[in-house]
Image (tube, rainbow, N blue to C red; front, side):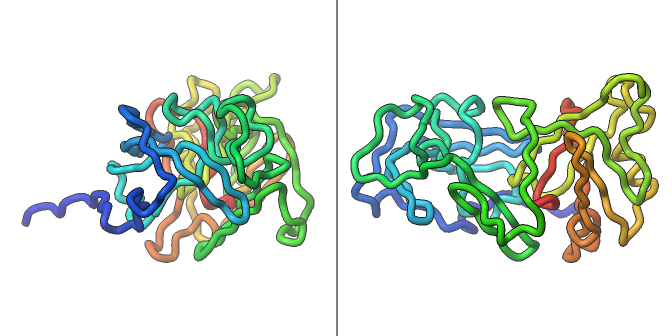
Length: 269
C-alpha cells in the first residue's frame, strides 16, 4: 500500500483577517516577510498596518498577514500574538505588539498615535490548561496563582531565555554535568508557540555524560514528574502536563539539530 501523505497546512482551517472589511487597513508596499521558529516552522506573507485591539487596549501598528506555512500544527490557529522582543523582530515589522500597545515603545514606532489606548506597564502573564488559556495584560493577577511571582534574569535580548541548572525526571538527573567544580547551566526558551517540552539529545559538546533526551526515553514512566531548576528556583512539571491524553504519548521531544538548549513549551504554562 502507498504510504499516507504527511499532514500539511490548510489555510481554510483558520479564520482569516479580511483587509477589505477594514476602512483603516493599509498594505505596506513591496514588504513581505518570512518568519522561522526554533522548531523549524516557517510562516510567509506580507506586511500590513491597521488598528489592533487586544482587550480594551488598541493602537495603530504594523503586523504580518500570513499566507502560507510549512507546519500542519498551525491548522486551526487563527494567528500569533506579537509578544516577543524587538531585537528578534524582522525589519518589516520592527515593533512587537506588546511594545506597540505600551506607553514606552522604545523609539521603535515613532510618536504615539491619536485616539489610542495603551498599557502604562509593559507586562503580561500567560496561563493555560489543555482546554483553554488566559492572557493578562499590564501585570499579573495574584488571585490566579498559588504562589507569588518569581523573577529571574533573561540570558538574551532576542528571546525569553533563562538559565537551567538541573532537569530531573522521577528523581533522576538528566543533565549530568561532567565538570562539577564550575557553575553549569543550559539556556531554556520560554515559548508558548512550542507545544511540548523539548530537550537536547546530544552530549552538549562534552559537557554532560549522557544525552538528556535519550536518557529520558530509557527511564520514561507514566505518573512521574519533571523537576526543573531555573536560577536556583525549583519548579514541577506534573505528569498530567507533559502527557498527551489524546495521543496517549509523552509531549517531550528532542531539540532540533543545531540547538543545544531547552524549549519550555505549553507544558510549563
